Length: 576
Ligand code: ARG
Image (tube, rainbow, N blue to C red):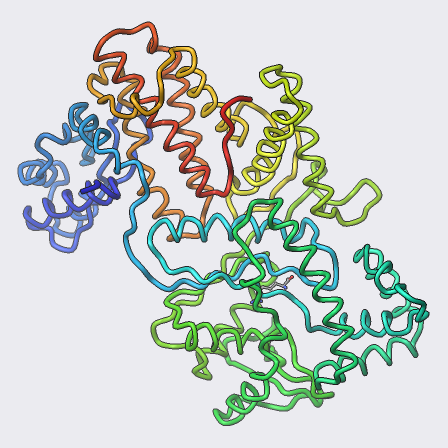
């Protein structure tokens, strides 16, 4: 049996001891300790329990210690006002590491989790604005799946707004020369720009564009065919980028705004039946008491415009119903930028009031900050335009190739290209994943490409270094994988061994909070502890059991780094 979540395991033992000591319903509150001299973990729950019992914390701690069942597992000491410092025994750590399955993420539960991520607007080419949702969402689905959940990816692409009326009208009114549409569509960004200019300058065109949206939404076959042509092309662009980025999204995960079209009249009817609909300035709106403006003025959720058209909000209400009832989700996770926080608050509230969701489903918005340039302003090209994702990835790969070429470890162009791709894409993804999701994120080439610090290249380098140890020692990985970890006599070995056993708890926490940066911070810790171990503990120059044990620690580290990066959607290379 694999150990699973080490922190939870320790906490359960401390909680049980608290109960035995007379403090019921008092959690042990076990945390990783901030400093190695305080042990590996710390239990912080005793002070709170003592306060409620009106007992002296250190006395309660002593009673807890008598009941605590960690014999053979850890040394426990009372510290400060009533903490417990928990230091895992080396023999126990080795024993755990030698059950190889402890280093794999174990399936713990199987909820149906719908993850709504990426979701670009198909009117334009995918740009950096969608990179965060795509990358963070994809790491989350990988972690969820590793934990055994049934994950349903939903790429809620925007394909249904007013912009499409404009684009379709522009496309229709182009000189009907053979192939004109095809060549114009080759650059979606340019196509969008010229149509928009026309839309802004030409009132007649703008009006025809508005009529086209209505025709499109009403199912006019000609308008629909033009629209479909446009959408297919745009989706192909997206798919190319998903593959380049190494995300798990496929065309099968596309559940576009337009797919809810037929459900929208029903949404309006239900709202009306429930008495939630109110007309305001010709539009159909829902007013809920909890949403008021600064002056206390009621803030509506508009669900149908006066011309009959539906809105982003209407579609999202239909999506809530589909995900809760048809897909039977236990949890729906939405990854969008923070500016949509209020939108989702309103949607979740209206859905609850109208009964579009189910009792069991938990609807959760995971907002993230904006992507900024080094100047702290929104990330733009030098000319002030939006940065296309494809161009950004080109540059990442180019920079990584230059770095790899300069280091001289790889010589053939093939190897350099391969490594450049893995390192360049990995750096971009990791830079995003490693920051706290909720803060704005500064895009900085030099920082993300550095081989030092909390970066993908640093982790990939640690992994490659381990491969070099095996090469130099002429040890093959498979035989090393069977060697037992035994001594752990050096503190650096102990530190590393403990870190290796924490993968499960970190992945569980990352998923619970939708915070992939916990996993990044952890992998950085593993790599740093490995580097420390490598510095102070001779590996190939040691002998016998010690050599075997140290080689085994190397294998385990490589496995955790590769597995952990894999959960973030980042590859490794053997040499760099
Ligand atoms: N297409 C939207 C955008 O680009 C994001 C959609 C997010 N998902 C949702 N169910 N609203 O901002």
